Length: 499
Image 1 (spheres, one colour):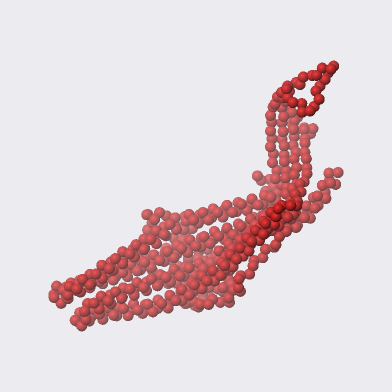
Image 2 (cartoon, rainbow, N blue to C red):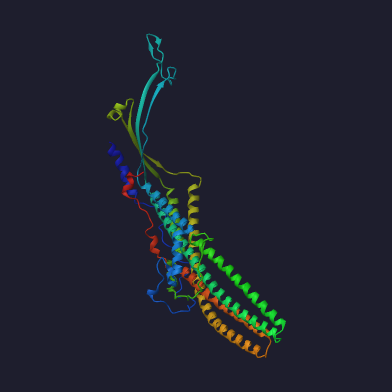
């Protein structure tokens, strides 16, 4: 009779288990079709496939061993990255929680106690015992009770609630994995940008110091001429003023360098007070960055992958909200052994059990389920909008990077010519002053112009390197989207015996 009555129930569960309510996920299209090519042409020839950005270690494209060393320190010791990785580990564990619902939940609660019943205990409506017309008093009793009960419950996934929950958990896990990759990309790019900014300041300080040396010689010259009665005191004061101003500029450059050095110390996980970056003026040139086509950016950026996986999560949440409209079936059972004597606890007569099923069908909920479904759909629409916005932002950032490098390449070319012209002007001004043709003001003006031109050229080279870093970052930094595909969990048979 038990097999006959429970058989149809289990048959229904098996057939219904293949049903999953809610929308199937498919990635929405970008807001507009991706363009076939980038608007701005880069200031270099397109790189060959073998020159692609290294996977995972994109900074190696700059061929700077010192930068490589700092990046490795960052990967090992940066606390923000360690926190992001811990967040990913937590997400993996939380995703595994969702797989537990695929298996029956079994618990055991053994107990044993000894009790004495009062002689004056209430009879709870039972008639008193009467012998020969005499009501017999209630006797106290003492007994032991030993129980080993088991309870079993299992949610029948009739309409895919458990599966939708796991789908959402895996999408959330993959979103966290992509977010962790984006944290690493942001941090490593910030380190590279700070590193090249520091190197630019080293080169700029060298330029200023060379100007200080030149201006000291100029001051010695005009002081000597002033002693000989050839130069005026005004000329000496003008040259001294220029020299002092240039020394102040050198101090300000050193101050800026110290700020970048402290920032690098923070990124690599070291105290700023004990961290030191050896002086080495900037000599690097921007490498050719393989751009690919715009549509590839959608696959190469971890932040876009984060938004896409968030859409998948919200889509699963819509399906989960839909399951609330359908019956919720739980199969439960209990059993065990109970006896007043521990010697007979495991005997067959001490066995007890029960088996049943509970079906919960929402009928009237005051609009609760409809409101939850509407909220889930709105959250999905928000995720779609955020995804499309991230795509547009990616296109903008890449175009900005290409445009910046193209403009800087042109500006640096003309600025290098300006430096050469300024050097010639200073040489002519010195010769004319020594020859008594012009005043020393022309020399001071030429010195000031040369220093400004050389500093600007150095700054443009630093901006080139920083712009190259951010262009690589905008292209995804060599990130491989397949790295998050394996970030998902599945129910395993071994879990049926795990706590």
